[in-house]
Image 1 (tube, helix red, strand yellow):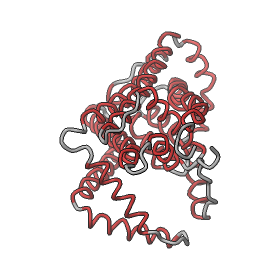
Image 2: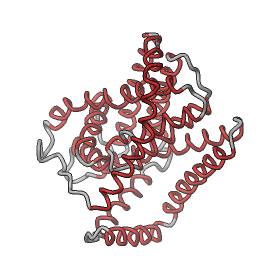
Image 3: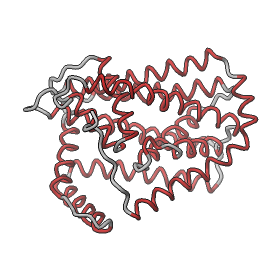
Length: 340
């Protein structure tokens, strides 16, 4: 099984500086919250057990949605997998990604555990790519909706309006560029190859255009697999995943005695998770998600003591507990694979 895990390469100095910068920002944003720990402890003691239990059940529903998403994507290429095993694959791949390669390690694990046919690996390739695309697209749409709702409904300061409008425009630009890339694939491929070459040159590494081109082809193929209404079931799985994940957060807010509005919940939920995925050098977005989510909810009027308890509780339920559950599943999933 040791051959399965990716070896982490030594960071280039530029990568080290970027890593330290992101980590420093996260710590800078998170440390001030420690002063409210005494009040947070009071909030924690007052939380009804049954509402916290509902948060756990909601998170279980979220992972069932992820499993259903993976199962239905594999069905597009006639690859059969049970819902339970697909949930196990999701849990195990997340744990692999945490210790070995981040998103790349997680995708590699999904491919390994779902690839049963040497001569037809298209299904596992798509399954290792498409779930993150659909989830990220949903998060981006949620963030756009939440930001627009806040700008229209809430009495925000000029600074907040400028910040939220800037983020909204950026997310809209990213989504728009994604659809343009799908329509003009050759031009998009040439553009990405040029950017990749320049980036590799800055890092003093050899450019591998064939690998980049192959990755883009796989992305385009993954998207094409959703044509002719085949997108409905995978999208339903992604929707269930995100919906129940948000419900986990919402139940914790209710348990803490602070019912947030729909717009506030969406804005504080979507953006931090997207930022955590953008900070690809920090597995799981640890520190980035907690600090940005805490900062957003506090800035939107949620009491700091409540925010600290809810955000940390949400991360424990949605990230750390599933992560620990995933590690024991790795030997089980690895058993029986072609290279296991």
